[in-house]
Image (cartoon, rainbow, N blue to C red; front, side, top):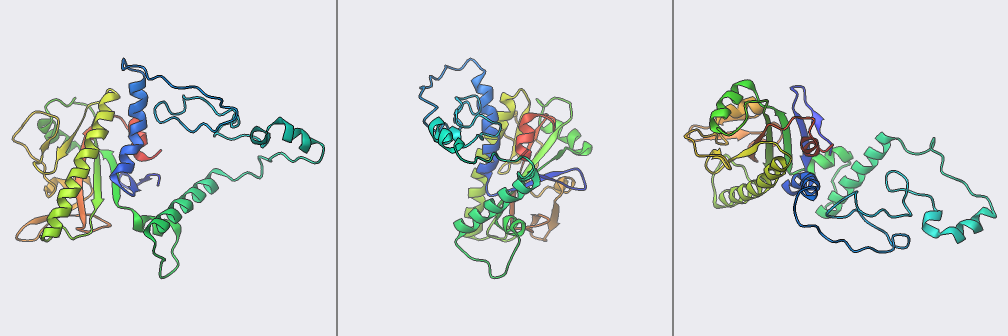
Length: 295
């Protein structure tokens, strides 16, 4: 789903998994690599007039074009599919061309895509709702990851510059990746420990790929390793930023003291969350940040 700008200037999007977030930026990194000095990949050519050419996994929209879909948006007229002979037969009778005035509007197409997406999620889950719900409600219920992008608060920025000595002293963006957990993270059990470990590996793997994509784009980027509270790529410092740090309140979370321990609380999912944070100097208008936003 496309991001939603909150009242505090935070852009939030909801996803089915961290792999979807990584997939958003993988194409940007691929395009960047395509313009570098990496070895050239030879592409085999074939007759695009007879075969469907899907977007290339490596060079995307710069790959060969399917001649049957020559219009913007990979669309075309029916004779691009059936061939000139079939079109000549149709011209003997009445032929109607699509009317742009009757075509669905952009909001209608977005709603159709959202409905299809939520329907697919329902099919994967295999369960039917006990009562009617809207597609948006169903989608948010199925979402497992929240990505929130915001300008790093000025107070935090001064402290984080000490945590990231290599970071440029420019505007910094904070990207918080919240994974929704099955178990309540305010208590401990073997199941909770196993889930936290799985969430940790998922975040670190995804955050590395996102940071490398940002770095390939010419930006500085690093993230906090939740297991140590330290910068992942940067040099060691004695400053830490753990998931239960009270400074997370400035990023839109609540940190509660339970007496025996502290726990982070999410506005929607409560304490059933695992939170990781990425920092970068990439501006909100950059392609990579726009991809993270889902635009």
